[in-house]
Image 1 (cartoon, rainbow, N blue to C red):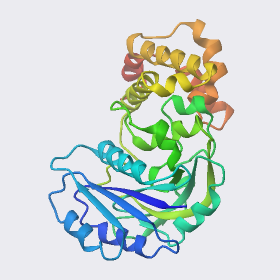
Image 2: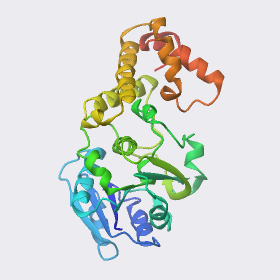
Image 3: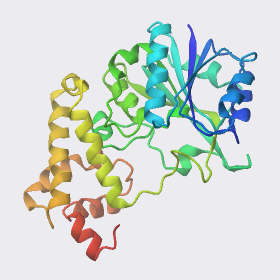
Amino acid sequence: MKICITLATYNGEKYLGEMLESLVQQTRPADVIIAVDDGSMDSTCEILESYKGKLPLEITRFEKNRGHRAAFSTALEKARELLADDDLIFLADQDDIWLPNKLEVMSQKIGDNSMIFGDAEIIDGEGKVTDSSWRKKASIVERLEQQALLTGYTNVTGCMVAFKAGLLRLALPIPQSVPVHDQWITLCATAENGYRAIADKVIQYRIHESNAIGEGNKTWSEKLQTNLQWAKAVRGSEIFEKLPDESRQFLNKFIQFLELRFNHAFLSPLWFPWIVKNARHIYPQVTSATQMIARILFSFVGVSIAKKFFHKK
């Protein structure tokens, strides 16, 4: 089994050296590391070049910034040419620190799954541990059904996953309209042999002011719009026809549900049975019955009314 790491970089000189050093220290070394630099204007590429003697690095550099999704998509396309179906791919960000046994543990535990994902400690910009578990801090749901992923909600963070290279046959090319690459790969895993959480902490996940993707600061309406964009991207992709009938029907109805919330003050009471039936898919992060009832009732409120009277943004 080969292990391939795909790394996207962009103006990452501040933390990249620490990240690469943590790859050097792995108890099971990577066989190849495909780094794609997204048009950095600092010393990121020089730092990458300096590690060629320590790591099996292959470096591609974009002349202009094309975005996080494009960088990872390019890296994965290159990985597909080098790997067999049962080889493993790990996604890497430039500012985290990998725990020394990450590659060894995850390669041992993936089993027949298409993908697995671990937990992480959280560190700040100075490398200080601020929380012992990303999963607990972010209230990550360990298991989601396919319909929940179709809403745009995800429980997977790319830098904590390992997946089999055979999944790339379905995942590539990543659709242009997909907001986040790891979310797309996770959905593809549900159409193959599935994915699961493991308890192991595999990285130190750095949350700082310059994160490209982290805890996020989108408003409620922006998140709703992103979910609609995601749902439409899935429906317009080739994977849509590979989904079970139940999932396709759910996705069509979910898109209609979101569009009505953007275009009408209130939804018709006729939506009540569908919302109740699918509440655990639409709101998978809600655990208490009281909160779920509140979410169900608020589902009938359109975006304009929510902004005007409920102080949503």
